[in-house]
Image (cartoon, rainbow, N blue to C red):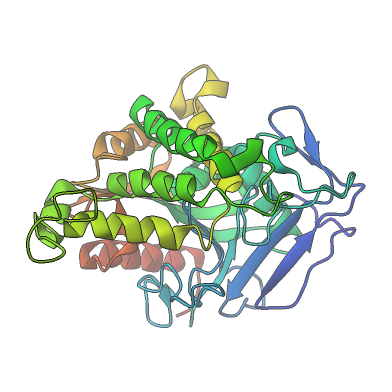
Length: 386
């Protein structure tokens, strides 16, 4: 178990900002270190007396800590209110939920838009390259600061699922159960390729200014919007796009030009333009790079089962979707086989859905039922009272 570090300052219940003392730098997988790291987080529900009901929820690439509360900038509901809330599969009448903005993010945690405490200037591209493992290490520091040594569960989808698997590899003694949804144990060549397209779109924007745009009071909005548009296509499926938009036009007749003639074009442009209001371009570069570098088996001789060798006592639930071509079921099966080989107790379900990768964020009754059943079973095994 990791001891609570007394030099760490924590803020009020309900959320706040963890501040690592300068004399406690966060060491990175790249060999570098970050001084004065801050981790912004939100909490929901109530921690029970023996601190056994805590759940860490890990967010995806463009998510944040506002998993079940309105986003402070957009005002939109939390990104997983279908799952987290009173009476939901992650029941806030029963569990205490923590969700932190990842290291490298742009919603209060230390990232490229933060100020370097050494120079006093915005990091920009002077921010060190980070990994999923670094994100998880920062989360572990947060939990130690909150006095939570063992989590009832670590839960996440997409990039959040990568963090779940990293937790199981690095800190299995600090978790009772794990839920990995629509994710993978390493990033595929196809996914790296899509990320590179997005990064190049950002860096090709004249306003990116070599990553120094914040100091120059400009923003590479066009490049970031295009990156978001390209990525958003991968979150959907062809049947979902066809059902929602087909070849429907925005107006009567064609423009015979390059306006958004089709509804799907208008939809993607809206996704891009709204995204730039809540996300930082450099953060997008760093987080996508962290995902590309993710390969859990790499440090274990290329054998994924070895990464889970210490996680035999952890209960796992792995979920995938039939129409998810970003993280297809084959990736989840690879994880499940490795967990089985490691001797871990594992449940797996492929869910029939035509909504693509984003299905885990939507109203999917089968997913909710599976998650509810797993959580109830794990809670009974843990001795958590309803």
